[in-house]
Amino acid sequence: MSMKKFNYKHICGLLFLFVVLGITIPTTATASTTPIANGDSSLVKKRSLKERLTPNTFVAQYAGNIGCVSVGLGWESLSKRSLTEALIGYVPHYQSTQSLTTFTLRQYYTPWEIGIPFPFEAKGNLKLRPLTAGILVNVVLFDGDFWTREPTSHYGGSYYRFTTRVRLAFSVGQRLTYEFPEHWKGWGKSAELYYDFSMNELSIVSALPNRRLGLGDILSLGVGARWKF
Image 1: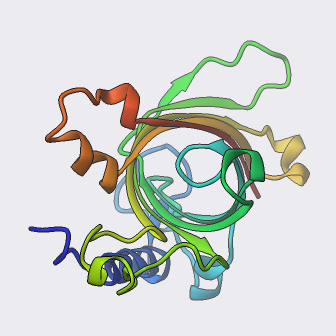
Image 2 (image 1 turned 180 degrees about the horizontal axis):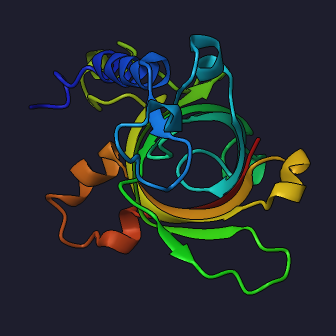
């Protein structure tokens, strides 16, 4: 498919629909890590629509294709496999021709987690999520130098054939989560450190025909922390 036919509005719309479905469709999870025995439905709990629409995580990130620094809120499912986040990012003047504000909507999926023995007296649970896959849309806000549809002043509007305002990116990474012990529950549920390697669709399209561009040229590293409440 040519970049001219590549419709970013359709991509953003599909991702937004995917995120909405992930938040609003009823989710079911066991109340503990113990398998449900003898069909005991008391070990299963469901969240109401209001609970699913209420954010339950706060995130702060440095770099990673969404801004120099970014902060936002997230919605993690009861199964802890699905995580939806909305972030506002900032790019200072020294990293661009002018300071920029961005908005990012992203969806993560984590297939499994590994428990790690916690050596300190505070107890709690330490868990590693060795693989986290994500997809995101990043949009530059409030700036006329960026466009969604190329202006006709640029060689009739069909020279670049891509948007400079909207980027679609894919990521993989890992997460390390410390689940607070019971006597810490007043501070929230857990704290988490993570990192992501991401690349956007324009970098991929640019690298495919250009052998001089390696993974180091198109990958972006982002590191961050989450607080789950």
